[in-house]
Amino acid sequence: MPPLPAALSTPIAPLASEPGFHPGEIGVLVYLLAGIGVLVATVALSNQGGRTYTSALVYLGVGLLAAVAIPLVGGTPLDPIADASVVEHLTEVAVIIALFGTGLAVDRPLHWRAWTHAARLLLVAMPLTIAAIAVFGATAMGLSLGAAIVLGAAVSPTDPVLAGDLGIGPPGEPDDEDASFALTAEAGFNDGLAFPFIMAGLLVAHHGDDGGVLTWAAADVLWGLGLGVVVGGTLGWGAAALVRRIRDRGYMREYFDAWVSLGVVLTVYGVTEVVDAYGFVAAFVAGIGFRAYERGHEMHEGAHRGASVFERFGELAVVLLVASSLTFDGLAVPGVSGWVLIALVVLVIRPAAGLIGLIGTRMPLRERAFVAFFGVRGVGSLYYASFVVGAAVLPREEAATVLWTVVGLAVVSIVVHGLASEPARRRLQRRSTGAPGSLGAASAD
Image (cartoon, rainbow, N blue to C red; front, side):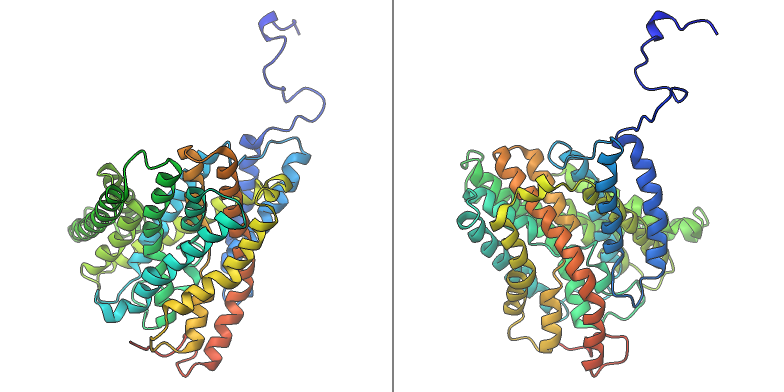
């Protein structure tokens, strides 16, 4: 065999025929991790019902194994700080799909009596959670006021992805269980509601150079939230009308109903972001609007099934990616005070804020406790933390503290809520006067 030309005598990458083991970086190893993850997810989801674990807990375990294995074979794991844009976009897609699917499951009429528990969680519990975390962050953790507000806003939402198993079922199933519906509606709206507080924290950190309180209220609250609701509801309703006509005239096969949800939510989110409104709010409202158009049509079942499948893949990808990037150095960034905050959020702050928000309702105390405790933190919080890092407004050290505190909280939430959810469900069912398998008889304010 003639010698290689001089230009090729020093290859830019190891050849397969060369002796020795030449492991690739994470770009190559990701295929192996993804393949194992999908196989594990398939088994986990198939056997999740009635088990004392959630699928996210299984994904976390696989990701932690990958975090150990990748450095051992010479790979370079993802860096949540340096690669924040990757985490941001991945979590963004996972959240909007989950929000649309959540909205598709909602069958309740849009009036106060039906949504009062969720409204109390959004208007009372969420601000209380943000305030408590911000105070702790500014005092015990030594964060600036802007960074403390950002941290509080990032971890305040109940996650629509990880909390999905605790909420109401797919279209057509009864949603008269107040505890399940409260968690579903809260998770649907509060990811979007957290964004104005994120922007408020960034404005404070930026010393208000971009405008004052009135500007923030007009741009981030009235315009961002209000237009998000209008765009989402209008496009969701219109998309359902269009899809139904196309299907009824034979231009689209029923088989592709599962793809409708992905096309609709990406379109809605894109339009909403183009007009500078909040796409998370629009995605959830679009699901409600889509479902509200001719509720009995069979296309809703297929659209929800598609959203559920894409949501599960998003959950798998996010948890695997984040878990595989965990390092002792990263987990040490929040410090002792940061880990104290993580414990407080899961065990004290969120439960207390939820119980305060539901004071005066006719929901039984055991159901209030269930709703208050299971404010799962996860994919949405990771999105906000990555968004904050990418915004480059906070000093690098504070941005890293915010992100790694959120990562630690997501991991703890997956473990604690994942192990506690099924036993709590069973206990609530045993003590309930409702039918077996329900969280309790319907109640109203």
